[in-house]
Length: 385
Image (cartoon, rainbow, N blue to C red; front, side, top):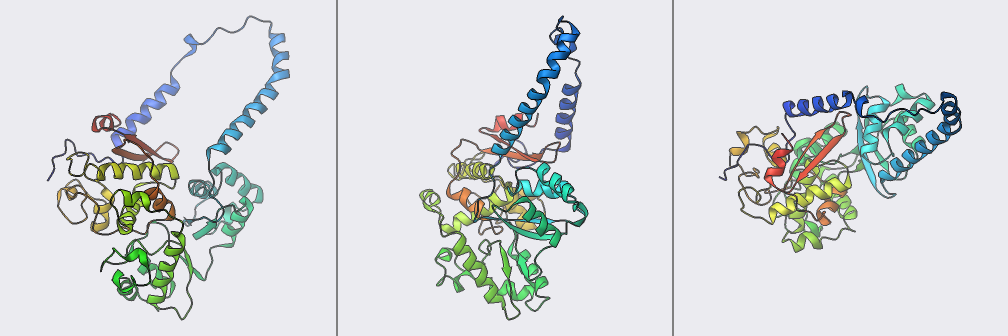
């Protein structure tokens, strides 16, 4: 078992004390009295200043606002047409929360535009809970209209990051147990049963189809069986990944099955931002390429152990040499740990080229998840001080 200098994982969130310290520092900085270093006020007559203000302040303000909005609009790359994103609206969620979800999924430029339009339409209290799948390129009004109409009743949505167990339970609930969770799990328990029809399963062996039940919205008829639903999801995986270039992971010695394993970890360890996902993928590639190094050659992903245990691991959990423990085992876990979305698969096929070996993430004061990357263990430790 490798000896780690400190029980801090490169992917863990900072503790409460660290967050509090940073928050206090930022608040204090904002409240410092800086008047003694400010430039002295102009001695020009007040009336002249007033006239100048009337003439230019409106134009400057308008120009600044236009520039700000222009920069803001350019900073977000919206989901392209032909792509889809799924969000789940919780019971009682207001426009602000839903807007933030839509912005994170890159369906709207920013949450403020969504909230403003919802208020203009007077439908803030009419946003219905449920799981929605939106296509890239949808207008703001079309998204709002769908949210007020409610989720499609005759379709089952499998969100990104769902495990086989979660998919089986969703199918059972949707079909009112006509297809039981046990029946679905049994139908998806042996990838070799489907390998003849799906080339991408060639290296999955007799493992389950964990990782290949593609997250999407499916219409499931009354005559559907467990196997037909499984094949529907495998067909979707084939369609969605048909344009992927697997040459990069293969150049790193990975099979398609290995690449799906890695993408499933990226799914669990990153946000919906494409750049972040590509950087997270680069961290794991860098670690795989340092095979066996006690500090840099293990994936050290809490998510793999959480998959095995069913809950976030404790410091003691990551010391146990269990099959999915990527602190004690080098390389990838035995199977994928969830069904990754297309953007995570793309990140693994085209990762960022970095020297990063560590990262952690935590929400900022606005609740937006922020990621912090480091090249060395020492740099990583400094982010917590």
